[in-house]
Length: 355
Image (cartoon, rainbow, N blue to C red; front, top):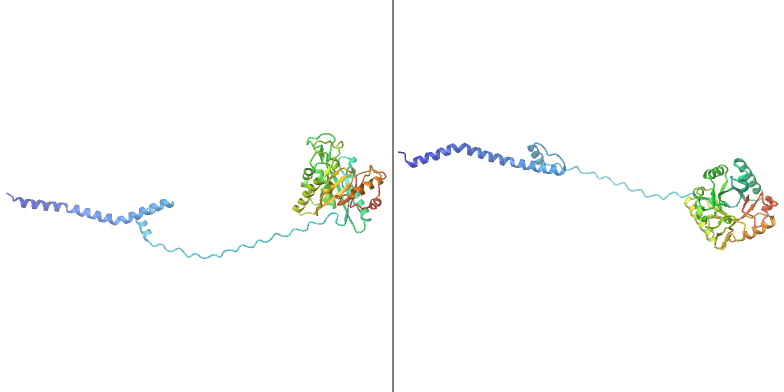
């Protein structure tokens, strides 16, 4: 019989001998796992950073660990770039002078009318080169008689003409085609003439009718005239209803022309007011003077020389007659005064119109 203690001792030894390889394998596994743990943490950290930045993490974990352990060289020292100084803004070049008044030691000689009818004045009877030749010839006669004053030839073109019957625009007005206006402006530019656009107003508003021709007035050689005897208000009928213009309306137009001239940096505009009846201009004493607008009162009556002279002298004394103008009607005056008779008027006219 075996002793029980001896048997138990042999059994314990057998178990130890049999379990030895397994214990070594377990210890080896634990040691290897501990060695790999920093690498795996590094890979996990790199992967998380890559997910945040949109980059791809290195596929090889060991390479990632080495890369993360390698010291990163410091960034290159930035070279200071001197700031470019902002240049001081230069003031805009000065605008050229606007040019003198049309009446600066000069007279104006103008032909009036419309190409649509010979009954409306000289412009209905002469066109193109014939018009220029006659106009310049007439201006030359005055230039030979007015001493040291020069002469400026001009075309007074009816742009807005009243009608006796209603028109589609409700204003009893017919407007000249823009192409016709441009042809006269071109003729003026080619022959050094001035152009005056004549407005008969009808039922329109005075200032509004002037503003309608702004596209032409932006040209330095284009000016404006108003026939107030046809300005009949919103309910009147031209020719049947006597038309009028007020001092305030004249001021409004002058202010508009003054602002336009300053904005466009062009010479003073001429504003002609035709008058043939005493009551045509209301409250003329309210009319103001604008340094950059040449206001002209044109005595627009026809008849005998004596009657015309009386009206001319009366209207020339009005406060709104900054410059005086005299009208010669070639078809309605009897007799027609010659150039010397016109120059003998007192006061001598600054402008002479032929109609």
